[in-house]
Length: 341
Image (cartoon, rainbow, N blue to C red; front, side):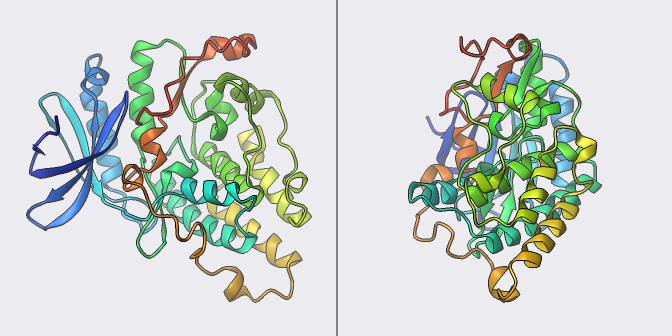
């Protein structure tokens, strides 16, 4: 049954539900505004010092104030359920827009990709400077406002859930395999350049219409991040200038020290490479807001706040399977696609 309220927030409807969280559209009665309430399931908080870790991470995320990071208004606990209250964004996700383009064999033009990258990089750098690493950068975690401005959501959620999953699954990796950095795939500590790698995967997908690594199982994809080299983007889109390709491949370097130091460095290099080889294209037109990406695709009820991040939880992969190379058997403890992050 639908709960009546969490704290002061009146629940209106369920947007998505899965093994890790449930997200509701709710109403803040004092300000008469819609919000999204993300409720972490109680079983994740039964061991260890989850409550204190949740409060610490939620405080950090709530302190972030940036136009391209979703605003967390409040966090609390009710009847053993920890929840975060966030701004409600109705514009759908970047994943939905990419999926719509891919269905037609299209991709995002370089100029629009650059404009998106610039804004997302600004949000990431702001968070990184304040000690917040996302750990699950992917198109499903990029929402759009009514004005079509991109906003990064779920800061802190991947860390909270990965620590909770680690309590019950020794050696578990939590993340999204297609966008996971090699160091994250190896179960090593991650820092800002892990997010830059994931951002590079996302840019690769924007300009080619596909991610660099695919496989039949999550573990098969993880192994490619650990041992493979990404295919050149021009293999899938010959209109990508060589200089732009070089920029993307540097962001996807296996060693963190070989990547860009900051997301803004990545964005600036991408823009410079694009303008250097795309002469004659008016900058104002090239770098305009991506108003036509997926335009006409109405957001579904499940996408109104966290989009596919509601319906695609970070995958849990058994690290021992990755290290042994036995990926074909499919022993990874992957969550079903309808489970919420």
